[in-house]
Length: 439
Image 1: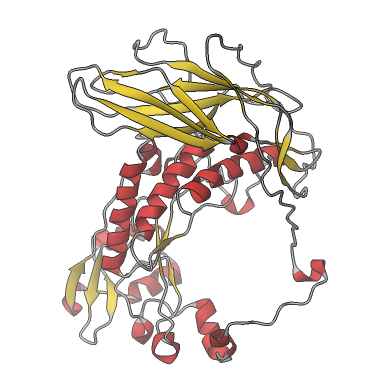
Image 2: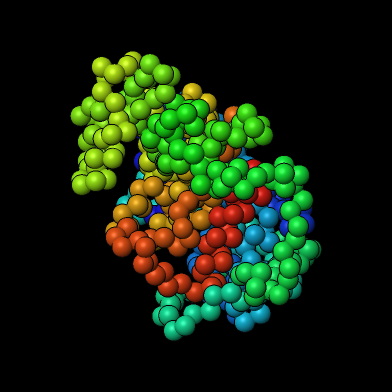
């Protein structure tokens, strides 16, 4: 089951305590290491939403917390907080997010199912509270943007979870958030509005040539190169630094660490080129054909042409493996390590993390994504980004294209999805990625 994990020791999860303060919910429990070896445990909170006019999944992950490394017989109290309004579902008829009235069952434990058969007795999930919302609350109004052209068959969700007995029952007054009603404008021509004048005095004073260099970039070769990051996925221009004080922006591919040419040659004139050695040539093997291959080889240098340098970056575990830890502190330390290497190699923006939802095991890039769950993916990606951004001037570019779940023929991908599924998955991931962890 989702959330299930093996270890070298066993844990017990004490009786959960639930506190509510308006829409804010806090669930806490004491975690105890009952085994013979030290280890960590994950405390997980799920919610069963009422089936009103919107069908809902049987349980949704609302949040989780990871213990520290506990010695045998040691305990730690873990707390999970969430806003119950984050559980709102998207109603396509009214184009709004609605927290429906009814009973919300809170579940606490260390796996997504409460059936312990064929597993260790310590693996469990138990009802912790029953929260009643007295009326429908619209948390956000939207405008329809991607209606389906054809009908799409949908899976039928399981029946509502049985109403638990002998758990605290709470009535939650849920104040509505500031209701938003965004407008979606595809182009200025469609909107009928005139473009606003550029308010930035630096951009307004730039010449046409300077603007062009800002847009198309200057590459990493020749006199325009001001970084050692050979193999970077793209750059802006280093020539604008002395003219306007605009530094070069260097992008390195990811998402399992920095993807750079591992060996480079420092030439007598102070410039750098990729080393023409078997290890580097093998990396670009599929591009080494015809005129393109000859051009790439011409941009390389033999080790004897100058001084050979090594710029090996750390090959971090892939996102899918990191996500198995459910450990935000661990992933933040990974982001911190990536940020340190960005400083070392002169990289400004790391093209990662990958945040697509794992929808198909045959997706060629599923290993680059965290999970099939948006909350887990959002929290862990936020932790990595926070670690990178702890280094001044270093940033991330979250990828890939929305709803990407294929590898072959990517330029002609078609992802057929309902607007509700698209909005709820993206929004639940964003709430964890942006609101809680970064702001």
